[in-house]
Length: 109
Image (cartoon, rainbow, N blue to C red; front, side):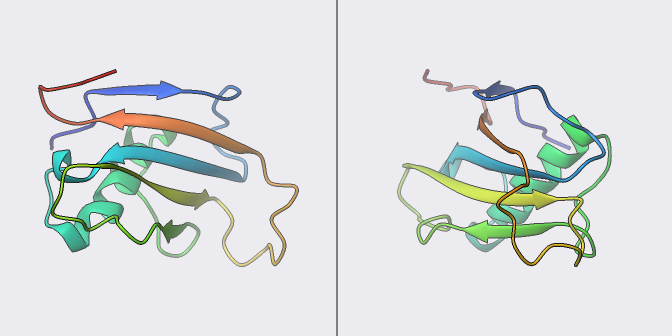
């Protein structure tokens, strides 16, 4: 598995088991997956690397930007809700963190 090579967190410490919302920024064409599979790949790689478990369609959710599947190299983001299940209708009280992940060899700060 080709995991993200580097991740930069721009918020508080990662909480592994509690409810968490994460905005993840990445470059569109750097993710080693087909354009339609990029968001799932990034979410699963993040969960595996930082939550020590795979992404779960039963307890996690992915919110997509409109350009996540672009064929042009550009920065984009996804928002992932982890460990929420169906317990929350309103997510105002769920902690949010922002991360940037890099795949591949050509990492530009």
